[in-house]
Length: 84
Image (cartoon, rainbow, N blue to C red; front, side):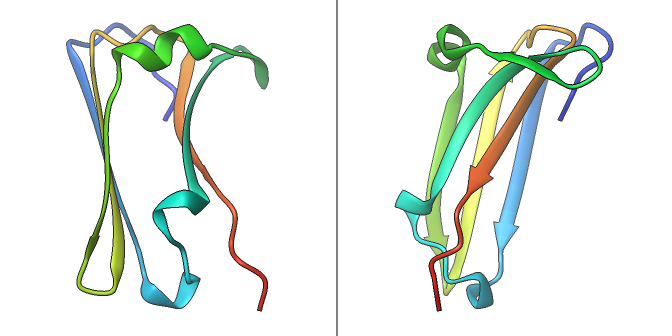
């Protein structure tokens, strides 16, 4: 999610189907500066995030929140699907 304008809060909620085979350790949260593409990672911004990664039934649920996110920054998730 890239925010173009200032906002009070961001709430990103993602659910992954069991067919992905993802576990908590397969998902990482990141923040990066964004202009035309990702310019650089902003690990200092991670300390302001609240992120919960949990299972609900067989689904993996990721809930990310941040108050006053920085405009022109990419708040996102990266995941690696386990090999078959």
